[in-house]
Amino acid sequence: MSEVYNHKVDICSLGLILFELMCPILQSGSNHEKQKGKAVLLCDKQTDGSFLVHHFLSFYLKGGCKVCFLGLVQSFNHYSLVAQKLGVQLSAAREKGQLVFLEGLRSSLDSLLTEQQDSRSPTPSPFEFLSSPDTSLNCLYEFVRVSLSETSESTWKFPVLIIDDLSVLLSLGVSAVNILNFMHYCRATICSKFMGNVVMLVHNTEDLEDEENNFVVKSLSHQCHLILQVEGLTTGYCKDIHGQLTMTCRSPSPVKSERNITKIFQYKIQDKNVNFFARGTSSSVL
Image (tube, rainbow, N blue to C red):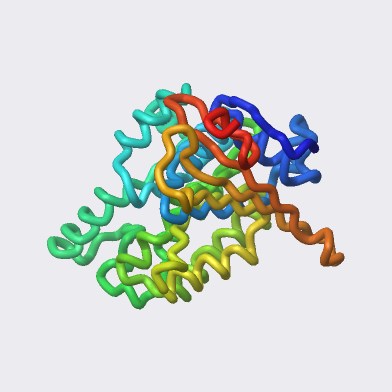
């Protein structure tokens, strides 16, 4: 592949392009079997990487997959408005059962209020851990498992879990170990048992010396098949270049030289598009 990659793409096509660029085992776009059982880690460093989350959400819904989305950062209306720009109706997808959306902002408050009013609720809340952050995330895992366990192959292609974002759980007092245990069970169930995919966003805070967050990032980096890290420019703001995207595909090959494939691009986010180009080839530089 040529090192000069200057391509203006619809953001909903970004996922397939990334898979084709980074993972030779996924180059057959028509063979969905090769796209199953993958874990994708999204990281952002000194910039906002949420555009990748919006992309993957729209990408999998358009692709006919059953999606469980843990929106821990924004409201459903926020995700819905962005998805509309990308050509996807989240409300319609939720009504027909393709999308299971957990709104963290509302559900966490409801969980706390319900606990105060009636501690004998027959159905445990996915956010039951808020009453004791040291406990496991078993209730949240059960919510994910049940949401995706009834995925019909005749209706949907395969199940997908998307999390935005794991760093919020650390802010709520959940330990790094419990978060990693939660992700281990999610990957074992969804990727291995259900043959689906997992996509998760976590902030890279290595410059801030956040030991627990850094431990989560490093641990997940060794467990995921594809790592996409976006970061701001070290030179500061530029109207023509919004940041840098590093894509790393981890290969199962035992040969060290073939283990990882890494490519680095710069990008510019537009209203409905993302412009990718090799470093130093932006129109503002040439």
